[in-house]
Length: 345
Image (cartoon, rainbow, N blue to C red; front, side, top):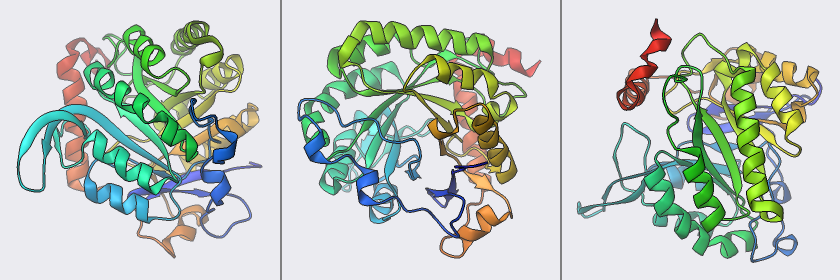
């Protein structure tokens, strides 16, 4: 499809490929971050284009250092929860850390993550909150540094799963929507939102018109609350689930002007085939919203799309540990929401 672009995760980095290129498309400096002269220091940096090059789940000091050292990376995603911070000296305490459940400890705190990324000053930042408590503790910290982030042109996305979706429709969402959006409006008005559904990407299901109607109502209610101070809106969706029925998601984009879609594969989730990702983008192109779609995905295959990248980087492989941790992360959700077992029937 014309304008096709897809991000391929190789090792821990997602790389965009586009037609007419034999290798990675490395976004120019001006594309990575907004110019500081264009940003009011009292506001957040503008919503970037959807075609970012992502470093996903940078939840340890080593992963973050690798991401910041990679010149192709334009945006960094990390999971945020309250857990055990372990210092270099072995001391531990409970605070806001960067870690993905079921892992509950990290050598990287929120403050350390922010400090390193602000010193770098070139990458956009996405914070995936895993609990309301983590969000409530983190938002004031982010608000305190928003001027510095805006001056360097670093956009910030605040991500949370705020509605039940495929695989978990029988249970409450991971984070209560009203509480999360109220906290954002209070502490970080104008920050960009990345809202999603609590899902199990491995179930034989898809996003429905009902799912999208609920999200549209939520987004419009938040827009009415924050008014002109509102930031951009990104809808975070599972690439696997979206590939089965892209129509409702495309219609949702049409009802939310200026919004974007970001397709993801979860931490430790197996890669999607490159043919699945290509067909998904082609579908969005046919539906007229292809330029509003981005990808933070692990993609596996032997097509020219993937082979072009193997010349320069190590290909992604799913290990037994990845499968185990992915299974445990699903079980954590099931334990918190036992009624969601209905998807197995």
